[in-house]
Length: 63
Image 1 (cartoon, rainbow, N blue to C red):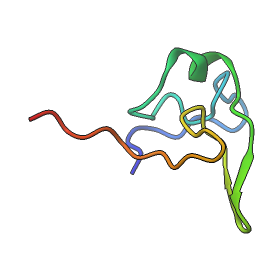
Image 2 (image 1 turned 90 degrees about the horizontal axis):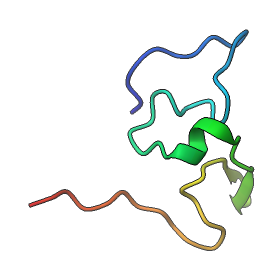
Image 3 (image 1 turned 180 degrees about the vertical axis):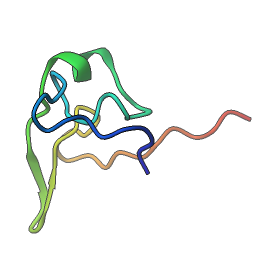
């Protein structure tokens, strides 16, 4: 679940609309809007972490 304040829809941040609250934010997220990719019949993903044909999972926690 994302933490933090939702950006203003009147003045959204550049790049990905979630980058200000995303724990996985990368430099590209602040500059470029991610493309929408259909991954299943009724499932579309817009994230720079998602690569077509691959399933992303968060990194394992450090031990």
